[in-house]
Image: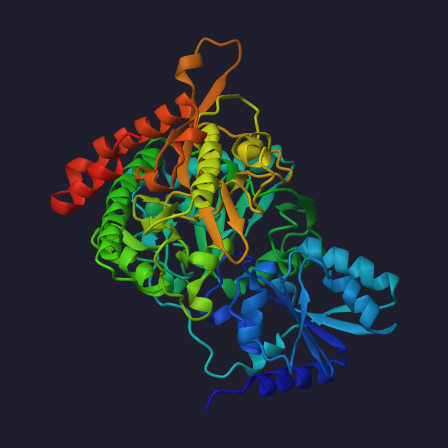
Length: 595
């Protein structure tokens, strides 16, 4: 019989008592500190029943608090027992200062150093020590000690990713990245980003939902030689010849022994992205920590010709799949058939499943009707899926992992008759989307500098949106890839040729509706300005899926914007029509008509 949440909390407190702890901190993270967490590592969910993607729990001797952000204020009340937990804001109530205010001097706060970045650990130690409190690392996580029937990790072996799709050999990639390590003043780099070492070795996997990687970490030397620490049973036959010379494989449990042998080694590690345990273990053994960003990230972000060709190809097939779904949706609405958000999400995936190269969604589909779309990261799986209603708008943000690339697209759809206000707001979002799509910019320009291109028209009417305008996207890897992004917040990474980013301005009116229009775009040299006095870049659209013209107020568009909209739809029709037929082709023809 499953343990109750109360008994699980009691089990954690029993371990706290053994260690003489006044508090124990449980982040929504695992050892790899990535966006996605395997079911086996969902420790925060185990102790609280909360399924959100961000948060933190602090267990005290006789109470507990869950910290969540604004996305989950409704969900937390549905999932987490308020007789066992208090609810606080993750952003408005910093957790360490809260502990300082809540506990007395000499308090001992336990944590698992594998689940927190080094930067967090250093800041926590500094703040707690000033209050005469101690941060105590635990050798054994109390949750792991008491988790009955803990899910197993998948036993699916890694994939040897075809070099024809990857475009470069692992040897070439490792030598280039090794030179980057040397330029950053280090002898060796600790690589903990799962997509980084998988890209480096031209492998993929199934260990993490929505992210085609295997679990592990790596040490990369400045010579390009590398050791991967992972589950050796996942490595397929032929991997040695596939990755080429200079790579050794060890079980993950051997990482500690290898870190303790780094006396005098200058070790590059990202204090914000690699866990505290690995860096502190190396430092205590005499390694010299060189703080810096992942030396692989920038090279991985600049897609080569083969990777871009794969991205283009999968986006065409994905465009057909999503367009077939939109055609089906329109026909069902016309027939008076209305479904809930889960049925719609599953139906959309059914069209992608027809593609032999399709692997899985690249993230949980955001299928949101009416007011639910006003929550920009809404997940219908976290409650009861809402039913479509007539005369409303529907937002669907979805993506796919294909063997030749990764997709991410959002469309906002008219369900029956829509209001003038709907049209006004969608058109303002569209104007921002067009402005960013058409941007031309010199080498050295960052996404932060371009972000206002997408917001300008909303701003002129007193509106805005509270998320970034664009994130990087990997090649059959993470749908949220760095280091580049397009957002208000500071980012000093220039946009470079080959980078793929999203263009996704939106607008959200609480309790009423939400709007987002998203395409993926690739940075390329601007041929029209090839002879300009500075090297110039522009964007190439990768996504070819109709935008709903029923939601557009043409009177709010300039002539140039109308031309963009019509030209884009002409390109969509030319790209997708050879791959569609019958009623679906007729729908495409109508959906891409000039306005």
